[in-house]
Amino acid sequence: MSPDPGLASWLQLALTPGLGPATFQRLLRQYGLPQAILQRKRAELASFTTPAVLAALDSESVAQAVARSLAWAHQPGHSIVTLADEAYPRPLLEISDPPTLLYAHGRVELLSRVALAIVGSRNATQQGEANAEALARALSAAGLTIVSGLALGIDAAAHRGGLAGPGSTVAVLGTGIDVTYPSRNAALAAEIAQHGLLLSEFPLGASPAAQNFPRRNRLISGLARGCLVVEAALASGSLITARAAAEQGRDVFAIPGSIHSPLSKGCHALIKSGAKLVESAEDVLTELSGFRPSGYASTRQTAATPDAGLLAHMGHDPVDVDSLCSRAGMSPEQVSSELLKLELDGRVAALPGGLYQRLEKGQGR
Image: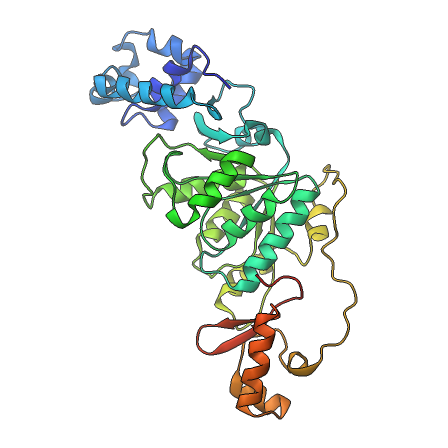
């Protein structure tokens, strides 16, 4: 998408320090498009903002920032989408504070697709990541675009699953779109830029400041028809996204977990508050009224053969070696040997503190 002729005017207002989105949108309501705003005498704009902001509006530093953004937008695969553009995502127009413009790198057409947000803990368990990736893959195969925040853990797993299907994925950043954060996800970000979409409302070069991420979270939920929380502690930022989703009138979903796991407590709190309990992709799809899924592989588990050996004594909660010895009537050496085999087979994950947890078959990584 090539920049439109009026884009420089949008950028001049958006990049002026102190002229925030709320003031920008009041000006739009009063005068129309940015070109019309900038044609007004600065004294006429004084009732909307301060003299310092008006001075900055016409400063050389803002002009240079506009030039950098225009140069970025001219590069292949880059675009800047404004409130007036046809490509602007309609769901964001429904939220209380839509961004005036969005920096996009990748497939802008994904902004017009029906989407689901999948979020969760950065310090996820192996099973949690496997669940997020499997669900995202199934929902992407059904035609949903997966939206998340490019964080470690659940977000990254959700993006990988989204990329595996035709729905693909959108990563909403808490930095400038030219800044990769966290750096460990650089390869994933590059893959999303090629096959999905990177999106940010922050100017080029914006660092990962703490205040950026709650703003990012409202866009993750705002872009989507619903928000699925996979694993989250009670103080998790994922719950901020879920609350934003509820306030925006989106469906909220949560996957339950062990009553002993701190990463289940946030999901359990959401379910107690009315979030829909999710065990499979079908649980999400049946709740999205009006969305007609395309063909995809079901994630409902078929009747399984009974577990044998040590797995029959593990249950689904984390467990230590001593407890397994007691349950199975085996020596510590025998249990440790069996656990190693199961871990290599992707059936068991080793957790901190000398604990082990079983993984659903086919979901080990």
